[in-house]
Image (cartoon, rainbow, N blue to C red; front, side, top):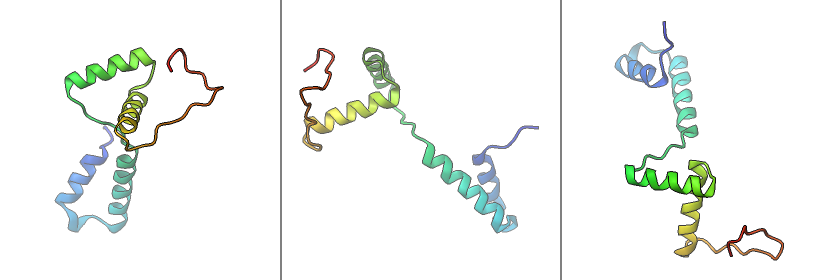
Length: 96
Protein backbone atom coordinates (compact mmCIF):
# COMPACT_ATOMS: atom_id res chain seq x y z
CA UNK A 1 0.00 0.00 0.00
CA UNK A 2 1.43 3.38 -0.96
CA UNK A 3 1.16 6.48 1.18
CA UNK A 4 -1.15 9.05 -0.49
CA UNK A 5 0.42 12.39 -1.36
CA UNK A 6 -0.80 15.71 0.03
CA UNK A 7 -2.59 16.71 -3.19
CA UNK A 8 -4.57 13.44 -3.24
CA UNK A 9 -5.54 13.86 0.40
CA UNK A 10 -6.73 17.42 -0.22
CA UNK A 11 -8.71 16.41 -3.30
CA UNK A 12 -10.36 13.60 -1.35
CA UNK A 13 -11.13 15.96 1.55
CA UNK A 14 -12.66 18.51 -0.84
CA UNK A 15 -15.00 15.82 -2.14
CA UNK A 16 -16.26 14.95 1.33
CA UNK A 17 -15.71 18.16 3.29
CA UNK A 18 -18.64 17.55 5.65
CA UNK A 19 -17.15 14.18 6.71
CA UNK A 20 -13.62 15.43 7.48
CA UNK A 21 -12.81 16.27 11.07
CA UNK A 22 -11.51 19.73 11.82
CA UNK A 23 -8.24 18.28 13.18
CA UNK A 24 -7.61 16.20 10.03
CA UNK A 25 -8.35 19.21 7.84
CA UNK A 26 -5.92 21.35 9.86
CA UNK A 27 -3.19 18.74 9.44
CA UNK A 28 -3.75 18.52 5.68
CA UNK A 29 -3.79 22.30 5.26
CA UNK A 30 -0.60 22.71 7.32
CA UNK A 31 1.15 20.07 5.21
CA UNK A 32 0.00 21.79 2.03
CA UNK A 33 1.19 25.17 3.33
CA UNK A 34 4.57 23.70 4.24
CA UNK A 35 4.98 22.17 0.78
CA UNK A 36 4.01 25.44 -0.91
CA UNK A 37 6.39 27.41 1.30
CA UNK A 38 9.27 25.08 0.47
CA UNK A 39 8.47 24.83 -3.23
CA UNK A 40 11.00 26.93 -5.12
CA UNK A 41 10.53 25.61 -8.59
CA UNK A 42 10.26 27.97 -11.54
CA UNK A 43 9.01 26.49 -14.81
CA UNK A 44 10.74 27.93 -17.89
CA UNK A 45 10.37 27.37 -21.64
CA UNK A 46 12.72 24.86 -23.29
CA UNK A 47 15.02 27.48 -24.83
CA UNK A 48 15.27 29.30 -21.50
CA UNK A 49 16.05 26.04 -19.66
CA UNK A 50 18.85 25.37 -22.14
CA UNK A 51 20.26 28.87 -21.61
CA UNK A 52 20.08 28.41 -17.82
CA UNK A 53 21.97 25.10 -18.13
CA UNK A 54 24.64 26.87 -20.19
CA UNK A 55 24.98 29.60 -17.55
CA UNK A 56 25.12 26.97 -14.79
CA UNK A 57 27.95 25.09 -16.45
CA UNK A 58 29.83 28.26 -17.41
CA UNK A 59 29.62 29.86 -13.95
CA UNK A 60 29.58 26.56 -12.00
CA UNK A 61 26.31 27.42 -10.25
CA UNK A 62 23.20 25.52 -9.28
CA UNK A 63 20.04 26.30 -11.25
CA UNK A 64 18.63 28.33 -8.36
CA UNK A 65 21.87 30.29 -7.90
CA UNK A 66 22.07 30.99 -11.64
CA UNK A 67 18.51 32.32 -11.67
CA UNK A 68 19.26 34.50 -8.62
CA UNK A 69 22.41 35.78 -10.35
CA UNK A 70 20.58 36.58 -13.60
CA UNK A 71 17.72 38.35 -11.83
CA UNK A 72 20.14 40.38 -9.65
CA UNK A 73 22.20 41.41 -12.69
CA UNK A 74 19.05 42.42 -14.58
CA UNK A 75 17.72 44.40 -11.62
CA UNK A 76 21.05 46.21 -11.18
CA UNK A 77 21.32 47.04 -14.89
CA UNK A 78 17.77 48.37 -14.94
CA UNK A 79 18.30 50.39 -11.72
CA UNK A 80 15.83 48.42 -9.63
CA UNK A 81 18.72 47.62 -7.28
CA UNK A 82 21.84 49.65 -6.51
CA UNK A 83 24.99 48.30 -8.14
CA UNK A 84 27.19 46.42 -5.68
CA UNK A 85 30.54 48.08 -5.12
CA UNK A 86 33.68 45.95 -4.83
CA UNK A 87 36.42 46.96 -2.44
CA UNK A 88 40.12 46.63 -3.27
CA UNK A 89 40.49 43.27 -1.47
CA UNK A 90 37.60 41.54 -3.31
CA UNK A 91 38.60 38.71 -5.65
CA UNK A 92 37.12 39.10 -9.15
CA UNK A 93 38.51 36.02 -10.95
CA UNK A 94 39.66 38.11 -13.91
CA UNK A 95 36.32 39.89 -14.33
CA UNK A 96 36.18 43.58 -13.50
